[in-house]
Image (cartoon, rainbow, N blue to C red; front, side):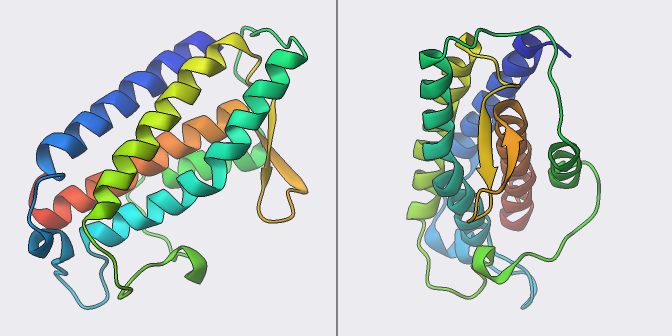
Length: 183
């Protein structure tokens, strides 16, 4: 897949996701967003809080990587490259893989006091991600790197992070829609 093809797909997928969130989830009453079908299941607000924590973690480093890439004049290349970790994490986050995974405690917001503002926050952060996807068209998304985890020792390519964030968001917005009966 070429870089423009990937960025076109990510932009279209994210726009669709934001539109779905605005039309089907944003204006739901708080009770519907807080509804928990099973005691051990997340509710819709917790799904959005989970995605938002990753937006908070990765958006600033994405912006920095784009800025540095422009300063270094790393122009776009043709093919998208995947790191081994990037490919694995993207496949894991894919909403169509049918598997559920245990979330680390720091990313699990089950039974924590949250409000419907998490949905609004998701839309705001999603729009910011959309602007970063558009800005990424000017740089080599294979060469720009984003640190993984608190140490930043391991890294992903910018393209891998952008794709993972969109796919991960799709997974949890679909989950929120199922939980509220909006799918």
